[in-house]
Amino acid sequence: MTATQQTYWLEHAWLGTHVGPGVAVEVRDGRITAVHPDTPTPPPGAEILRGLTLPGLANAHSHAFHRALRSTVQVGSGTFWTWREVMYATADRLTPETYHTLARAVYAEMALAGITTVGEFHYVHHAPGGTPYADPNAMGEALVAAAAEAGIRITLLDTAYLSSGFGQPPTTHQLRFCDGDADAWAARCSLLKERDHARIGAAIHSVRAVPAEQLSTVARWAEQRRSPLHVHLSEQTAENDACREAHGCTPTQLLALHGVLGPRTTGVHNTHLTAEDIALIGGSGTGTCMCPTTERDLADGIGPAAALQNEGSPLSLGSDSHAVIDLLEEARAMELNERLRTRTRGHWTAAALLRAATVDGHAALGWDDAGTIEPGALADLTTIGLDSVRTAGPLPRLGAETAVFAATAADVRHTVVGGRHVVRDGAHTLVPDVPRALAQAVEALRA
Image (cartoon, rainbow, N blue to C red):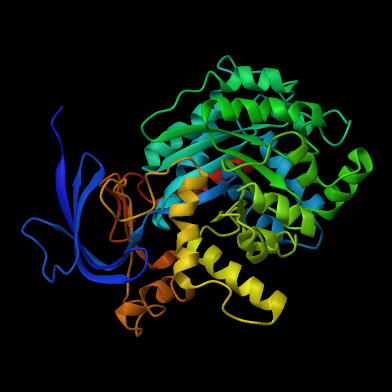
């Protein structure tokens, strides 16, 4: 096979601690082989990325089909639990074909937003009623194929979802999520194969959805493969109350008792926690994925992200229900939420927020070789224009602050994945007319 080589010249580049002006990046076979700062003019033949280039962004928590709910669930009032009924109705209409079409468009929208890797928290496994497809992983394979066609990387977090609540069987809607028990879930998951653009991880939907005595089965499956393991954790106070009633402890304590917590585990939301919970999560090195735009959309509450990080929990970010798809907004919102909660400013630097959106987000998804602009890293890049009405004005050296506190997904000009231009000058190179693709995919589910 012939090696592919190329050079990118970055007008300004975020190098982890500072903005470097004029940075040449050499790429071979999809990986960065050399970084040359202080290169004031583009080398001959280099691809020129004008603006501020960041490492590719990692969306650590996604439910792709929730994109079909955007705007429709904003009508009227309600709670997380009433929103869930609308979500179930949408899940009922998915097939492998319609899910592939929708996810391809959603992942293309992510690429337009500078996202190069997605963690797909995937639990719609079977046909309505719970009958497996001829290929028991047809739905998961549809997502893996959709990511490839949209040009981004994916960690498929195949999710165990076995009950509707503590000691309760799955509801009619949930039957298609359910494998029966954790051993059957593990057997099906073991059929999934990793590819160059796709890694396979595991997820526990929540402590209410996996019986306590089966939590360790999921944890062992992930441990044996050294795969990431994610879990929705304490998103709702009702779940905490039910867990205490059933087991006499909090969800975090229950996970700790069954060996779920640890450095390859990420708790998603981690919203309603006790001081002991925070210490257990941080002390075990368990990560925290905050999804601020969804958490505010569903009126979940503001999680103790700063306290968790102070205890040792690495932070990552996700767009979850895709009320919006904008990792810069997720990063900004985490800081701004904390300001509202505490009435003080400056809980994270812009550099720390970018770390959550890049290197730590990739690590949470099992891509330890992504999220930085340095030799050996995957050549995944996101370039933000510095000439929009949002970003014009600040000095280039304030690039991190401009990215986090001013820019939006609309400012992304280029997205490069593995050295390949997936978004060029704001247009997707693989999926023509992404807005139309989204509209058609969503309409097909509502028909």
